[in-house]
Image 1 (tube, one colour):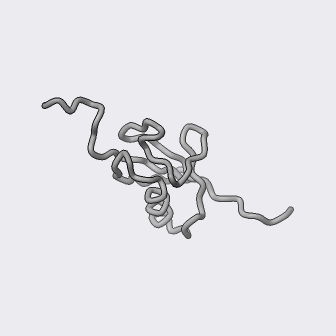
Image 2: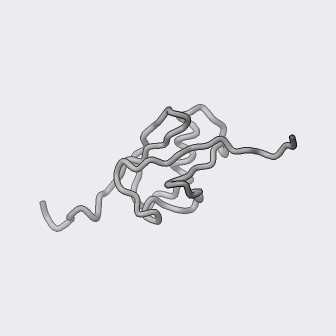
Image 3: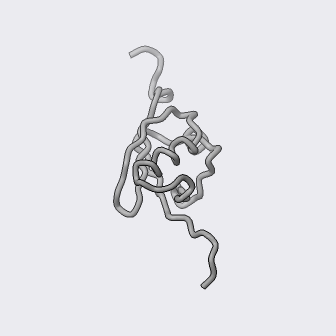
Length: 88
């Protein structure tokens, strides 16, 4: 097995859930979430910037990485439609 251990996996699957639909995106631990966001929006047929994303109830910033959140393979992030402007 070598000395790699469980700590360093070259890639991990991040599952993006949107209203019960999900897609899996294979990324490196240090991939900025912006790339994950773009891929998820494309897969769900949405315009860039349509979603906001959360992990364990906290908003994820585009500049952060899975490593920043100590994510493991198969972690799920949630996509929510952005509430943009407007008044009631």
